[in-house]
Image (tube, rainbow, N blue to C red; front, side, top):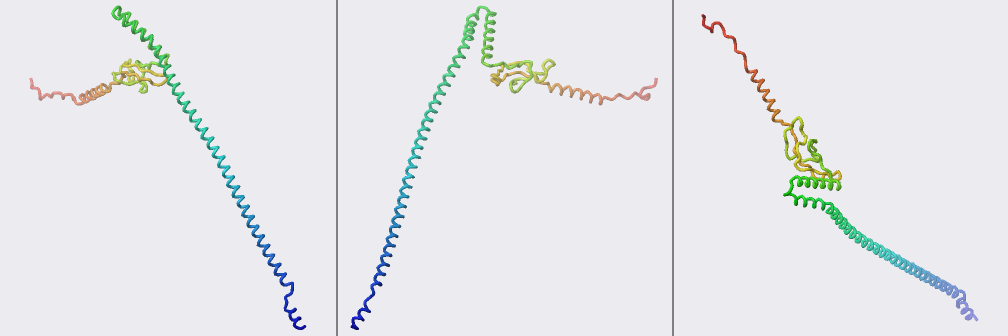
Length: 241
């Protein structure tokens, strides 16, 4: 009986192993929960990364399409500009050709009159003179129709912006200094702009003559100052009668 009691006292109580099993189960559950949370976080991060890459690829594709559209638009504009430039160059050449045609058509009557003047050169000098004068008038009318004006020269003041002095002449009462005396080659203005300067002869004051006159007056005054009257002769110098 005593041995049975001792054996019963030494046998563990059923509460001790139950508490250990509960603690182990709780730890297993916690570990499982941690694993599930870790797996869930990794899955969410993977989904975010996949979404980000997909979004970037979509945006990149959109930007590539826009760049292609801009490139095509630029190429079309460049082609249109090249066509416009070629068209303008062609129109410019055509306009220059039409201008030449108009100019030549206006000069043809002058050429005809020159031919007629040469044909009658041996017959009547007066007719030739009249023909040349008529041709000159036609040339002046043609120049005026093109906006060309003759620069006035003889009797007008010298203007270095319009005249070119090739020679000088002494100034007179009728042609004072800086006045144009003669015209060598006519000058012309085109629409208010200088086309060719007139080559002229300009009157200039004769400085050398003025200087010589001043020198002559000064020399005469000096000689008059040097001449002194002779003293009257004394009685001793004359012999007595």
